[in-house]
Image (cartoon, rainbow, N blue to C red; front, side, top):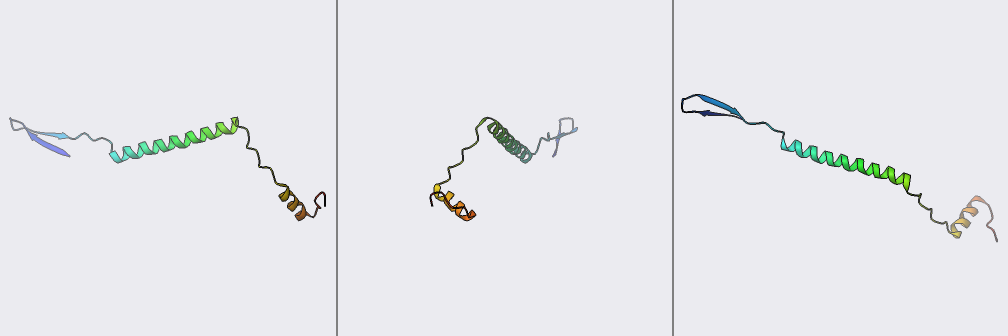
Length: 80
């Protein structure tokens, strides 16, 4: 990366190219940072929703399923 230049007096000057961050590393850090921010944001929203939203209502169990469960347990269904 060293470049040599000679001026009019014959002196040789060396200039080093400015070394920056590797572009691949920059992309990796940006993508990783965005992914981390996304995951942390989702977790925060999940915790907020757990505290503020009411719990989901369970679906009502059909009479047919109740009858079948009672028969499995050996209890006669009412009305039989």
